[in-house]
Image (cartoon, rainbow, N blue to C red; front, top):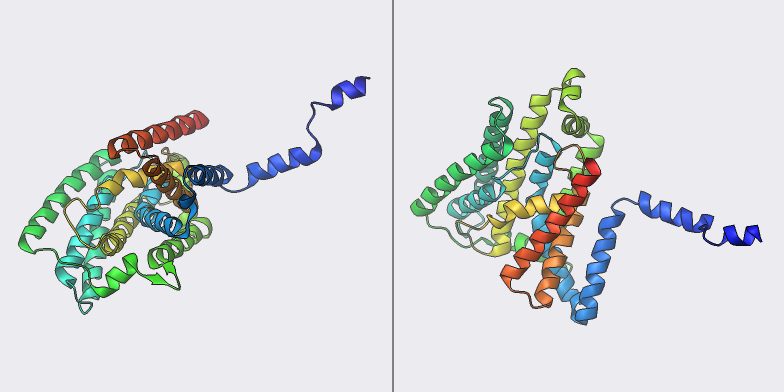
Length: 329
């Protein structure tokens, strides 16, 4: 009788093993949310999982993940690092490529080089301000963002923007064997950054610095160079994202990259990055970008207005931040 009473509520070894496996599976929560959103969308409208809509969602998510690459590195560097100049750098990079390269691919190489150099310079300025002047990352990057936005306005008035050339347009909206090029670029970037963060000396130092900068400094890690390097990489990657966005959008204006500043933060945080630093991965950011895009697409399917979509997305981000802050407290 006692055995019959006690054996019922205890889960079997197989069930416990399955539960442990799910917990150990990388990004299991993100994949579960993606599956839930996809299933909900399919129930509401079967066309939600059509090939056309899925490629559209993946393309938009790919663009967001590219824009979030540099932001992820800055967040990993710790010190409550957030780069508020991401969107401005993207816009200025697109303006440069448009102004220098025009619609011809002949001047594309120097135009892209100029955009990447600009991104590196802005990132270096951000890093020096944070490390040398000891300014808060939010204050430093916000001030730089305003200054760069002003420079972009002057440049746009002096040199009228043009449409993207064939190569940039193909990169943004073209396909290779049915797969959008932008998805291929995002996948390549994800592989490169994952290898960098997991297996390179710099990646290990970045996590160490983000987790505990004092311990890293005591261990002889060049913390200043690591953090400045993260901001420089953010500038370069944001400039690259601006070049891709130019082809993806098909035109450029002074607010082209603005939405991606906070969306990049949202993608990284939803993907598991901690705003206190030292925790997260770019693979998680990519999944966060997919979740954010799927959620937006689902709200459109439900008929939400743009204002209501912003409110819903903000509530989701708030819930994620609340959950992660409790986990780390």
